Image (cartoon, rainbow, N blue to C red; front, side, top):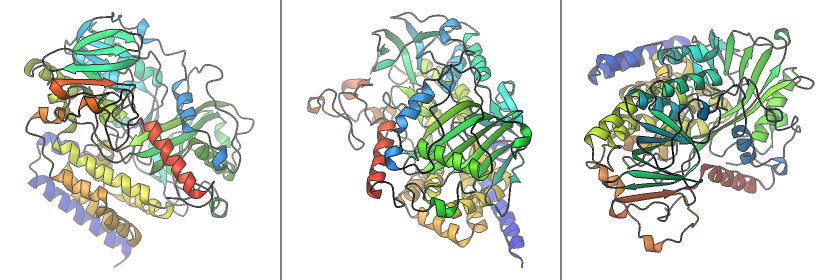
Length: 608
């Protein structure tokens, strides 16, 4: 029997297994519809350009002069000494200003110093604004606290998912299909799904309008330095400007900043990085169709002989493209890596790739330059704990794709409902418990462990095996690959997902899957399959460390906690940004980069 017929029959068999498992799991009609609808896909647009989808670095509206670019084209060979600290790139991205996005202070009423509200939401990104708006709509008084800054990231999403959220009007471009190239022999192939570019201004305006609709959301421009929670009492925050505020519940929606939440102990995250530019170029001078997005082009950025021996040669990356009339956004992305691939290296690869394609950036206007940084996986927040997390701070980033914005926006309503329930039914200090159950119940943990398993697998694959994995991934029935990306695939369906991938893959991929199954990530997946929430929510908050053993301001480590920054004894929790419980993630990734480069002895070799 021909090989392609065998694969088709195997896929049909896997689908039959899927149906049986779904029926045996007694899924509700709502859950069944969410799992089987081919139009249901919730990618995490926080992932810039990942193979599965994520936020993209795209069009800039009005950028302050001098902010849109970090410099000129990189040298052809970037050595260890030539690479800048990636913190420079992250600061560059975060410091952008956009004149078309109004200040929060000009839209929302002011939150006065010393105020007491029902809920304080710390962080005014997409997740924070969405949650604040949903709480305000339910009659909850909200204090929104954070720096008054615009949305600087661009997001790419599946169009049907944003439309389902009622946000279709915030898409500034919709592509009729998304294309993938897993090998140059196969060429570009459509995935059969519309893709959208989110307008930063349009999304922010919509979320702000929801916050302002009923007058229940007030705003304070400031950086939170301390969070204090006592059993039976209000929670209190203090800003770097010395302002104190009080609430029944504090919610941290601070993105990848983890200083003011408590996390489980465990491994460091994996990393996704992307470097992109949007350039002005006539439509006839580039090879891409204006109505189609290039989701993933896994062809090598440069010839094999040119790549050999370079410091990061063993870490794959791919091209992501969003064309528009007279412009094109191109981005080089590392989907998942155990050591963060530097932005300077991604920039070098992008320019070399364009050069190989016969496209020169020289002499063309660069509209915007972007650097995307997304920690993937790692440890989850301790749940429950008195302070609630939301968005990326709560671990809602898909560890195999980097998506988080659609997932977070979709959870804003259910989380707000759970907060209302907690405020009404739970004693002080336990108001967050119902919301933590919504975010990280047993089902969510099972799925996250499977996604983490996939992330570890992808990070271990060389380019050839990654191409095979992506070929198989997009050959899966849409119910499986779309559900995987959307975070909606019920845990019983993860079994047929894995089985079908194993059947359709070649022998090398099958061996990779088996090796990963018996790795620590595989063990965690099996442990999560039997996870059950603790009987008492207070158990997670009573693990105290003697305060007398702590030196104020001591440096935290990945293996120990700093009791001066979080005290859980006697029903009291205090967290300080100046002495976090865990290392800041930018410190973690830089240490990993330097350790890898040190092993390479200055730029040669392949590293691990």
